[in-house]
Image (tube, rainbow, N blue to C red):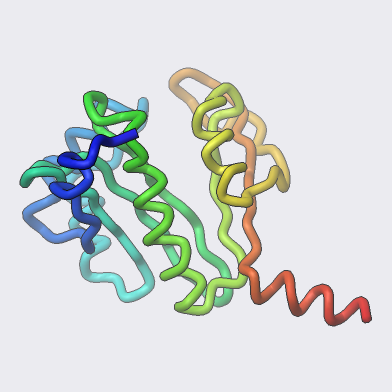
Length: 165
């Protein structure tokens, strides 16, 4: 848990060009097949992409991205810098990004996660994601299956229940 001084210094904001070098550095330290700076920069020109960063005392400490298409979203990236993990930064990013994606029309949000990544799976389950399927051999370095997880918007839950009545 972040102590109060850290919490006051941290802000969640939309990604900007000046954040990209720090985001790419976190991406490279976190993932075996990281996005490039250009990949992140390209998302800034897309209307259907939501990217948020956590900034602590002027330093990017985490980020989260969701692509939107029709009535679905895909959580593409979420990572927290090594020295800032276990301080609820990922939770604060999801607390911002998920409601925004649902407000923009996503009825459900999907993501892929390494089958062995228990901390991430636990985080996603805390936010109401559940396993919807498996992508065999999805990850290459090292080779591993991905769990496909999905979360319905509260509106979809209500609509589904109304259909049953």
